[in-house]
Amino acid sequence: MIEKDKGIPKFTSYQKFVIVILALTQFSVVLDFMVMSPLGDMLMKTMTLSTTEFGVSVFAYAFSAGVSGILTAGFADSFDRKKLLLFFYIGFVLGTLFCGFANTYPLLIIARIITGLFGGVIGSISMAIVSDLFELKQRGRVMGFLQMGFGASQVLGIPISLFMANRWGWQSPFFMIVFLAFIIWLLILFKMKPINLHLDNQIKLNAFKHLVSTLSNRDYRVGFMATALMSLGGFMMMPWGSSHAINNLKVTADQLPFLFMLAGICTLIIMPIVGNISDKMDKFKLFTITSVWLIFMILIYTNLVPVPFWLVVVLNVFMMIGITSRMVPSIALVTALPELHDRGAFMSINSSLQQMSGGIAAAIGGMIVVQKDNYSPLENYDVLGVVIVFIIIACILNLKRVDKIIKNKQ
Image 1: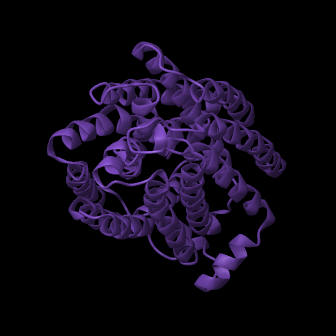
Image 2: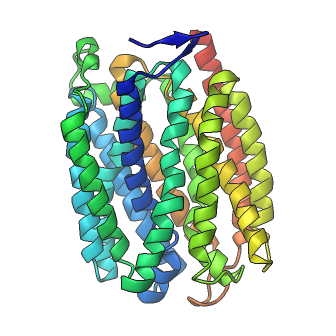
């Protein structure tokens, strides 16, 4: 039973455990995807890849994750969510292990596809669990804590991964992720309770009809569009972070881990604060404020020339705060759209679109950004920034529609 104090629901001890375990799964999955960005410069030089080829390696994970989300959407509400999480998470572990053994570009692409097929569904299952176990007034705080996995991957995961990659090769971070993820999988197996309340409210449709029914819901499609636009804006610039820092801003390989770590520390601090604010004020208003902040930071950062390292750190931190802060209110709003019996399908499709849009964004970014050779500066990075700004504006307009739909339901 949820305790209440002055109208603000408190978390039970079990809810706190669920938040921690989902944050850990978020940490491992996000790290597996995010680590490709700081390893990008190393990978392109080791395998002699072009920006387009590296963009394809990011797209391979995202596209397979998107396909997996669509394929699982129809039956996502037909099983205990704990069992689904266990199945796809162990597949993610095995796929990441394969990434560690990949020693050629084709093998890397295959490994990323396998990892994406399983890893891409985990986020949607987690969001469905959050929707089942936490009411709307709690979700801003929950999303704030879950997004800490994003920050933790930068504070701990990415600096440690870069340290390991510089000494034992770019494959070593993937072995580290496998070890951590397997421990998390055991915790889910032995400590998490079954999550099957939705089965009592399930409308009897076969998998295909359930998928079609979810896709045909007009309100749901507005939420899907919001998610797709968020991913396009968020992932179009991210894969080129390390290459831009090293080749354009003249950040050294030894300074790069600190750049990511300091941004991650600030993200860890700001996420719970944004989560609390999100539960106390209008979520769309908060999203708009953080989006406008991000627009200014992107225009500044993508036009940056070599400056002192401390200034690069400060500007990168400000930009990352904008990127992560807008996620909290937007996810909280979108997860309020589906009915209980549609949540698994909705979250699967939503996650699928998120992954595919992110992959498309990386591929498009790889075509906009040009690098003459693996050691020359990136070109057209400022053009990329302008494209992202227009996507952010479109996202604000679309999320306003989501906000209107939710308020009309209340």
